[in-house]
Length: 251
Image 1 (cartoon, rainbow, N blue to C red):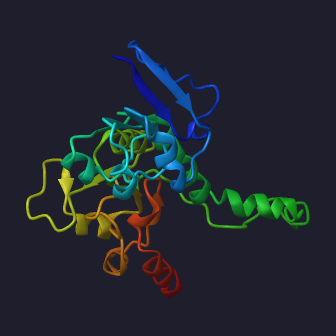
Image 2: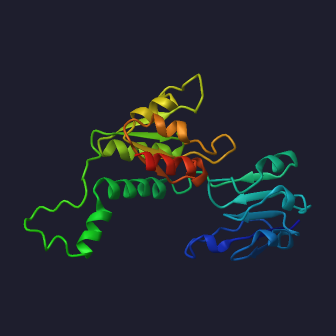
Image 3: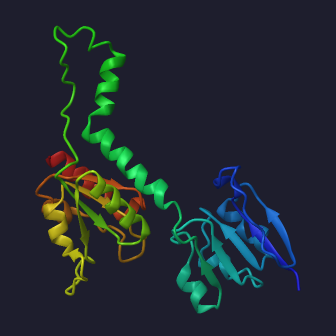
């Protein structure tokens, strides 16, 4: 039996990445990009759909009678109605260990840029402020060290652990957060509220689910006594935008 495999948004992966086809009889169809209202039309004959960012919601899934699997070409599955798929016997898979090094290194590229004031110094250099300075020393922005600081990490998966390893290499102390509201804290973790209160940097590495949406809100910002740098390389809605703006306005 030959399967029909449809990749709905091939353009979301770099062209140099070769997606290996399965060693089974199949027909492969690539679409560079797919709008939500094109999903049903393009995936009607699909046994397997591959997506990266295209939403696969219940209303579309219900109109794909042949579908047996949704393969997410990334790690997050929040663009797929996983509950509906589970109820109707459709497998949902993702890429384990996706971008572990890329994401963790990006966290530290952002962190170093902020702690060393790179953006401010770049802007001042473009304005020729340093050559105009009456002395060699030039102070456009504070410069602080990573060494000796504490990095709170939400999510103890492969990316969270990689961030902790890089943090230790910089002389930082990782604080893995237990689940928000949990009464039992796993070994190696601290209560969620303690992580918020004691961290100089907080980095988010958890999936977006109904439970984690708005994970960082007004109450959480109030607990951040050390005014940490907050880095979110996971999903935007983990942070309540209105609460973030209010916290920034309040200082």
